[in-house]
Length: 115
Image 1: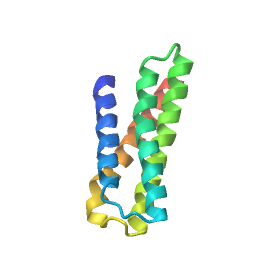
Image 2: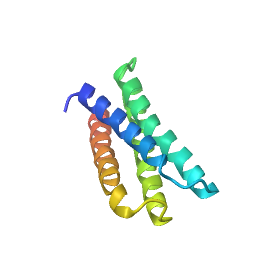
Image 3: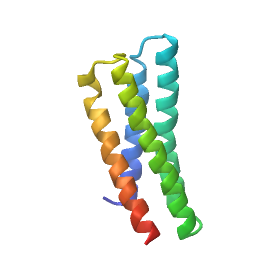
Image 4: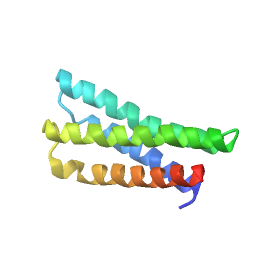
């Protein structure tokens, strides 16, 4: 996967997450979870994009690290939404799988950027 393809995949993930939150109920727990997962998923995409424009290898590695942390946080919030039963688990399955894959991809990039 090229950096541009990953950047697009992260953007699509953030958009899918944002659309999913539209179906959440309007209670305080749902609003909090929606805000958090929208922030973390979009931050994953924006930090990876910033990494591509990094000024140095160290800058690249730092921004990828942030993107990885945000992807992991997105994975957490999707699980939280599922456990609160705000959305049926079957409807979150693909998003949770994608979040997990993105965490693994970003972890591998981070590891190789430190070598």
